[in-house]
Length: 119
Image 1 (cartoon, rainbow, N blue to C red):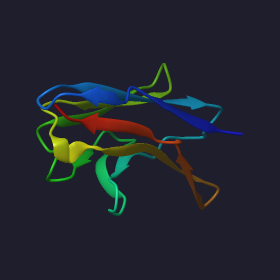
Image 2 (image 1 turned 30 degrees about the vertical axis):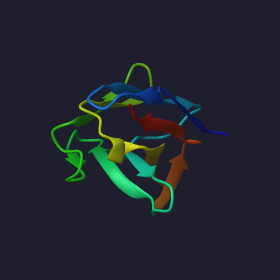
Image 3 (image 1 turned 45 degrees about the horizontal axis):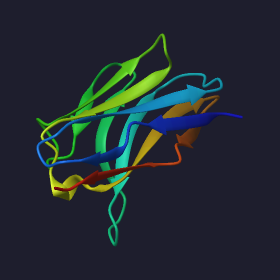
């Protein structure tokens, strides 16, 4: 049984920073794609940042230049560094890992962590 355990969310003032962590509890054959998504109240879930196993990162236009996705292989952990936070960044953030194994796609999701940006 694989679980993704997220942490690092909380309340922060506009302009502040937070770092989200996603630790993998269990064994996943490979981290082919690692991603962070978010869902604000009344809105659909959206992709925020994506990192391939080869190291290519992509970001939503709304966060490019402010957010950075990274991975610590030794700790089996994926991070999302969020700087210059804005009230519009308020949402539940979800970690997602995709692995391709024996010709099939497997998606793993965390439980979500709340980020609130408010003065």
